[in-house]
Structures are given as structure tokens and as C-alpha cells.
Image (tube, rainbow, N blue to C red):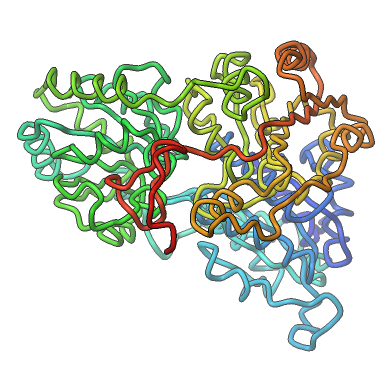
Length: 575
């Protein structure tokens, strides 16, 4: 009977799990795997990234948009360690990621062989699990287990490190089928997370909603992951509760929904932050009370009772003590809540919400002479009607996107929330477009962040991916500059990017249609034409240099110390 080697086992298992798009970069320790890919062209779509970090971010973007496990492949040593930032990014934002790395032959392990690194040890704190495969016989089980772990419970990254000799080893097809079909019994069971929560907990939750006069929902990434946005809308309407989102929860409700307060936190809307501060009941759904949301955690929603629902028990009472918690899948919990016969209207509270929105709107007083970044994002939102998948880097442009792009669909923002990874946006857009080719995809990136993975422009060009790349060019590392201005006496230290590349020429070099826009009167026309063509377009937009993001709650402070505008300066500037 014909044999199958370890490399083909990897690809066959991926194919059987419908993981047929992978991102990678070849190297010595994965040559057998790439040789096998030659025979799997019709089954596996391999996307040739230009850097292992780029491949990992692309797999992450693919995972977030597709709700499938993203897969990246890298060689041993530096190839493997180049994936670490991507793994950490996925870990912090609960993105299901399978990272397959090659390793030196088993006989050379521990000898400091050429391109050897202990990637399982390195990645252990930032993965759900890391495997070093010891034999070809255990390879089918390890791969099945790894894929299962990426997407069960709270999703996250898993790494599988495969020595080169195991990729070359062979077993019979009969033996492979026997090993593959063997029932996988997880050491930890997750089934209870997808069962109906106990009636007692739901009754307690309903009673708390009954007693509250000013309830509010905090919607996090867990709503997106559990695909619970439609269920949440029904809950919001049933109990007439306003909702605010974390960065990764944006789009849960259409932007103009009367219940939508948009993003809260450090650079959230003033009305969201004030409403949370006034609430007497906070219902936190699939969010982890991140410091960028809470500020001073002791003063965060200090007058409210708190209900926390999350699939990860480790997040309960980790940062904020709560009055009621339910551990489980959000869709299951919210569907059970909908079975309650109780309904509620909150006219006085909703009137107060409307009052806060009218009193503290985000400023739309844009410059008429220069392109402000807020105006640029607003125009992008207008052109795409708030329906695009928006991928960002990290920095000021990320926060302006969260504030001024009017998200109207869930799972539409792909950004590094927990890790704050510069260089994420461009490669993540590659994965997002491949996961959902029918939706418009925009990469909104800073002139600093885009240079961290600009080599992925070649990947976009090679595969002719219809991604609109918008460079928000203020010639600064903008977020760091803002902090230096506000809290360090404007001592600008190594944030000046005046010597930037000519991004239009760079885009042209990668054979991507490219434009540079400095005149506000030309912006509309360039954007309109860019979104009319079915191909990648890069637009370098020169914006106001020293624009700051407001509102802002300084790190470690509370809503009481929120800075609403440049004129509303917080005096204690040293901390």
C-alpha cells in the first residue's frame, strides 16, 4: 500500500478540516512541507507572504473575518521567532490561529544546530498550547487537537513545531487513516460552555434588570466571536438598554441605532463614558475590563452593580469585582435571557442618553483648508456607507477610525486591541480580503506603522487583492508625540518622521496604483475613483501634523478627569 509522509499528513489534515487557505514563507526546515504543497495546489491555497510576521498577521486577519482557524507556516529559528509578535497579537485578541513551524531534525534538538530555536518554550505564555511533535505516529492526533483548541471555548493561537525528519518520515495510508479516525478525547471538556445557563442565574439577572433605573450594556469582542450580535439586538430592544462597545466590539449595532453609544474608554465618546459613570447596572458581555476601557479601575462604574458574562472563567473578578457572573457562550446565555417573559422600557434613562449625546458630540468642526485625519475617516465612512471591513495599525489613526468611521456591521473592524501591534493593519487586510472577497476592505495605516510591514505590498500586488490602502501621513509617530506633548512638556524625542519615503513611489514600485493627496479639494475625487476600481490602490494622504485625539482619559485616571478638547487641558501633566 502507498505511503504518506509527515508533510503530506499536515496538508491532508488541514484540507479535511476545511482549512484550505494558509499563509507562509518557506525555509530549510519546512522544505518537505513546501514540496508537499506542490502536490496540493488544487486543495490548499498557499499565500506567499514576504515576512513571517506578515504571514501570521494575515492568518490572524483571515481568522477574525472568516470565524475559521487561520493558518501560518514558518521555518525554524528566525523564521519561527518572527511569528512571535503575530502569535501574541492573536492571543491578546482571542483570534483562532494555528502556527506550524519547522524544526531541526529530532536528533539535533538541543545541540544549538543551525537555525534551531526553542519555539515551543518561547511561545508557551502566548498560546493556548504549544506542541513539539516527537513522532510521525502522533502527528495526526496533535494536529486534530491543535485545530480543536484554537476555536473551542475562548479562541486563541496554538503552535505545532515539527522536526524536519518527521516531515520526511512515512507511514502507510492505512495507518494514517487509522490514526486520523481515532476519536480525539480532549483532556478538558468545553461542552458545558455551550449549554443553557442555570435558570437561577438568569432569574437573578432579570431581577437585577428589573430593579435598575439606568442599565447599560458593555459589548466586547466576545459578542463578535460567538456571533451573538442579532441575539444582543433583541435583548437590547426587549429591555430598552443602551449599549456601548469596546474597540473590538464596534459594529454590534448599526451606528445610528438609538441605543448605540459607540466606543467607551480612553478615547471613547464622552457620552459613552459619562453614561457608564451614571449607570446603576453594568452588563459586561465578552469583555475583560481592559485598562484602556476602565482607566482607574476602582472608580470605573463605581455606583453600579455589575453583571459579567464571559466564556473564560479566568476573566471573572480578575480586574473588577462583580455582583453576578455567568460563564458560558454569549449566544447561549442571551438566548436563554430572551425566554424571560419580562420586558422593560426606560424612557427617562433613554432621554438622559439622548441628552448626553446632544451635549457631548464628537467634534465635526473640521478644517476647511487642510485635511484633518478626522475628516479623512469621515469621508471613508461616507464612501463605503460604513459597511467595509476596516483593518488598522495602532496609533492615532486607529482611534480616529474607531471614533469617526460609522460601523454598521458586526465583525467589520480588524485591529490589534490588546497587544497594540504596529504593522498589523496591512497584512491583516490581506487575510481579511481572502476571507471575504465580496466585501470592501480598507487598510487604514499610519506613516509609521505601515513601514513595519510594508513588504506585504508585494503580496497584495502579486495576488491583485482589491484592498484600498490609506496612509494617514502626519510625519510623526502620532500617538507617542501626543503623549510627549501633553504629559512631557512637548519634548519630542525621536517621533519625527519628516524623512519618510515617498509612499506613492513605493506603491508604484510594487506595481500598485498609487496617489498622494495634500489638497483637501482633491480628496473626494481621488477616493471616489479609488473605490470604483476592482484592484489595489494606495493613497498617501497628508494630514494636519500635530492633531490630537480627543476626548482622552489619561492613563490611570477616571471619567471625572476626561479631557474633552485641546482647550480643556488637564493641568497635572506629570505622571
